[in-house]
Length: 284
Ligand code: PAF
Image (cartoon, rainbow, N blue to C red; front, side, top):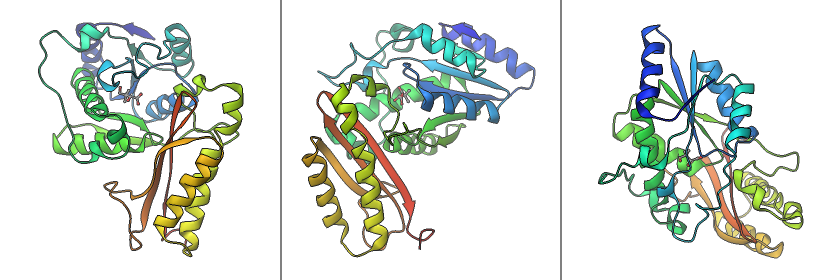
């Protein structure tokens, strides 16, 4: 696996692959890799001749007082994991490589970026869209792989690619869960032993809400409120628990069929997000 730190070096490698007629898949990450990231890389490997993974803890997607400084940086362990799944190149840029001094351009995907996580983390999705757009321009892949766990992020990126005519196929990959149901996340490492016992309840409550919607005996508003109450009872401080339409993440009404339930909740110092998506039609 090639370890590349500069844009020029990466472009040189990619040029040679392109000259040989090879296709390229890209997996952007912030490192501290877990089985969810490795599934993205494995899917990318099945899809293209070459796989590039970036590891870059992107400062512009962290708000003031968030965990940018303490975000786990585990470079050597990450590289060993990427070798084990056959990644061809890892791109490890410095902050100054991505954000050259004097840069004055950012990407904002309006409306959807202000909802849910965007309302609790102002500027977060603009930071994500900007860095992903820059990485797409640097790597120029045929396809890029993102986890469905970050459902709102995936929606933002799909809209950006559509609106800016970026020629990259966006591939969505299933959430990988612990045997307890807890979605894998780089931030799970912040959980204390006791919190690790409580955290899986987040997914249980999502599943119960989905089942209640499919049963159809309660309104969406009642299900949202009872889910928020259930989260609070076990010790979560929820930011939001919303039933939305998959297509644009607007709040769902009784007629919508393709739904996603999005949740973000704090457990001690850790903010967890998760979701379940389903179609009322295929379940009927
Ligand atoms: O999902 C992440 O790890 C990050 O938000 C991403 C897409 C790599 C952008 O920094």
